[in-house]
Image (cartoon, rainbow, N blue to C red; front, side, top):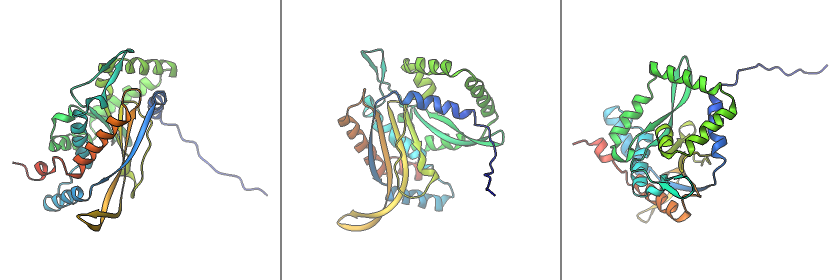
Length: 266
């Protein structure tokens, strides 16, 4: 007598085809990745103290986007895009595209959200925008249904669409922003890096936060370190400017850029 495996069938979510389309196009690019650690101990302590005092939970995603907008604004080649063979488009506005989990039609989906002109917004403004985007709205269902219709098209048509978009920087900015950010660390505990397949020129991936000993003012203390991956299209960005950008981003995060104005508004 043999044991027979039992199983059930489940429909493959159509929305996943959209993710596959983007990943397929991203694989066509030549990315390099840098893995860094960011000491977020002091910053997270300030945010926890603020939550205890007010009951409001500041968005960590909003804080990183605030720092990211500033760092890219100082190094605009990091979100440049090619137009044709011999031109680069360097945008003045840093539009950061991230993912937010919302409930639509009784099921959870991860939807893209673009923070426009992040380099011109305060931490508080980005926080309010992220919190508003996390609340499911009726129009989200319409967008979801429209995406379902698009994903019903044959794959070669969808691929042609994505390649046309990728060749038009201004159109790509409107639909997908200029910088990508993924916060995979929010779904797991402990340190760990993510290596993404990216579509925009710059992708920042937030991994986990882990504790380990660190040296502070000559003393060994237990510190909290964020695992941060910076990925850049090597056709556009060289290693040296990418490293300078990562150093600046880490500096902004470790010094709590914009936090004081958030917790103690004028």
